[in-house]
Amino acid sequence: MLLALGFRGVSFEFRVQTKRHRRKCDIAFAAGSIVAAFMQGLILGGLMQGVRVQNLHFAGSVLDIFRPLPVISGITLVVGYVVLGGGCSN
Image (cartoon, rainbow, N blue to C red; front, side, top):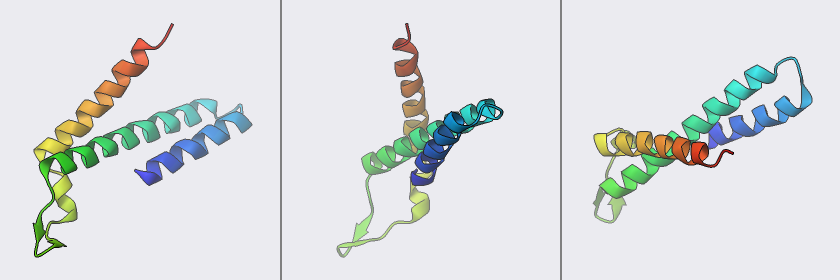
């Protein structure tokens, strides 16, 4: 998620500075935004699913986040952000 947010920031800064590659910067900004939103949903879904703890230590795996509930949460959050952005336009 942090890499996607950094990618968004860099593409936004380059978009302001160049006129030739403005379309590519727009696509990079959109891709970074979608990945960041999906990762937020994965994290939220992983927390809702629960974290495995055994003897007061983390007993799960990094890949536990790629189960059905976190993936559905990620997709739902991306769709929710799209609806929110579409509803705010004039």
